[in-house]
Length: 216
Image (cartoon, rainbow, N blue to C red; front, side, top):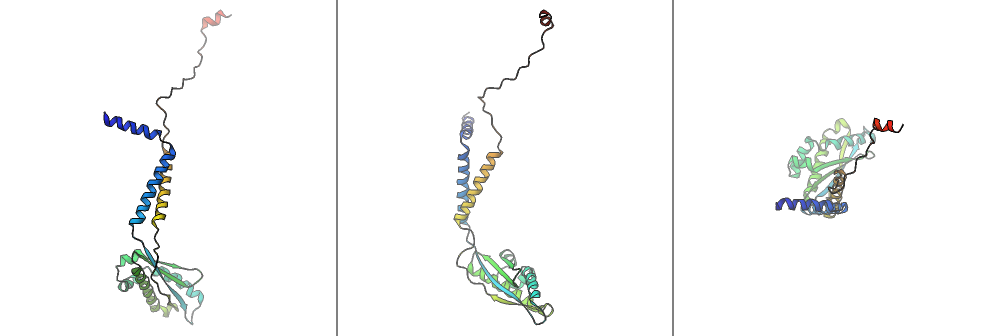
């Protein structure tokens, strides 16, 4: 009896709370969880190295630009990462999850970025992949007439590129408020138990035959 009464009181209290209090509670909880996630998760650092495609005397800039796009896609393939893992000192899986490449439609350049919780390891991975990619390009330069040259080595990052606890807290607060708002909109409307029932509309019945004859 006591547990049942307690649950009923809690339900009654929840029904009596205004909607804004539910939104505020969801926003607060989401902000706390997001901030805690940002504090617990170790910061990530990103280092980037650049290589540039250079045409030989038998090709032109258009050819170098096209091969730069192709090398940007090849850089994260097993043939390149397999050589890079030896110089970086990490596993192939780590390189696959940590290394990303980007190319430009206007310049024959490939950016190789590596992300890690260690700034030094991020630098080693980015430079190792750039070195491996350059070697693979040199091996085929006789047929492609395009060489890859290292344009800029990766430098040790001084600031993390991962989201700060403040940002993760703001994201969590926004997500918590949004979820609570959607829940309030989706919940069914409740009708109070103490409301008086609305009386049904009465339709007059047909007049009796005797009453009709008496009026004549």
